Image (cartoon, rainbow, N blue to C red):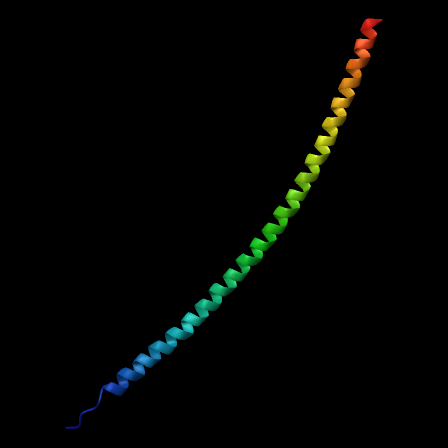
Length: 88
């Protein structure tokens, strides 16, 4: 009877599994890399939008501050006019 060595079959099967998994893993790594790059791009866009919103908020705060200063000045002027009219 002739015996067949099982060792070459085991080595071939192990190599097949190893290379098959490596290909799958590389594909998964590429997919993960693409997701990470998209997330980084989304984060950069969000940061840019936040910076623009902060700029607009700062501008609105400046305008509101100017309006309050003008309102305070007008109120003081009206008070002076009222007091002047009361003294007469």
